[in-house]
Length: 284
Ligand code: PMP
Image (tube, rainbow, N blue to C red; front, top):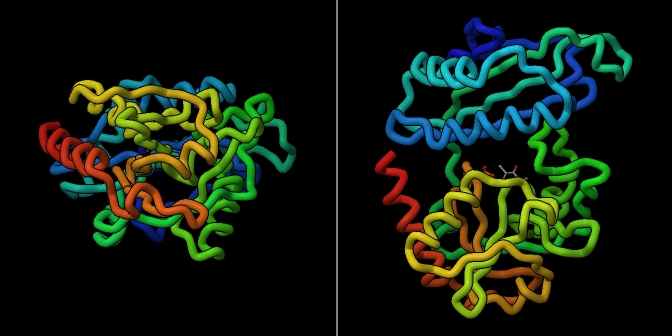
């Protein structure tokens, strides 16, 4: 494994970041999780755009052009000689002192890791997963806008721990207004009376790249799709539910808070979208 750190490659055991990096001390930084299929990187441009938006929102000057960042990701991917991969691109505030003031961090650290894809077991996709509403709320946008894909995932980790402890695979997180936002590492969709619905980004959901692609695919395939507020009631009474993310791709959800979704099996529209998704990624 060759790990890129600030323009140089290191082996797994040698790849190290300073303990004075504010990414480590304060979770101060941004990241992307990217996927490569059959030797090609999926939606890299969209990931780089989101990374630069996240960095701009936290006043993090990447000191590198988006084109150079894209090249660094491609070069590291090629160095690692994998066809299918999960790529983690992390930009942290850089090394400073122990105080919280990021002005003392002069140069951000750029890390690119090309790892294997940890696919969920096939039965999850075949049967769907169980989810629960978390007691952990999303932070409000006037505290921290979760459209910033930051290194601060404690909110998500706590919700995930709660779900796993309760015997569920995933947690559904409500926002400060009580509307559904998303899950711990995936966006959420439902089909209700034939219409595909997902919360808008201003309901405290990450603007997922898979989410946007699924909305595009659905509309191109003639489905009616919309971004709208959703409550727990909408989820419980939906005909189908699924999650989207770079790692999980499209994952059916068949039980939420003890309520069976539809007939308790992955729905036909969900299956059609999964098929469409796999057909499209083969074309990239
Ligand atoms: N929401 C959260 C909180 C995430 O971390 C992610 C990425 N794992 C997603 C949604 C899905 O986004 P994407 O489709 O861009 O991977």
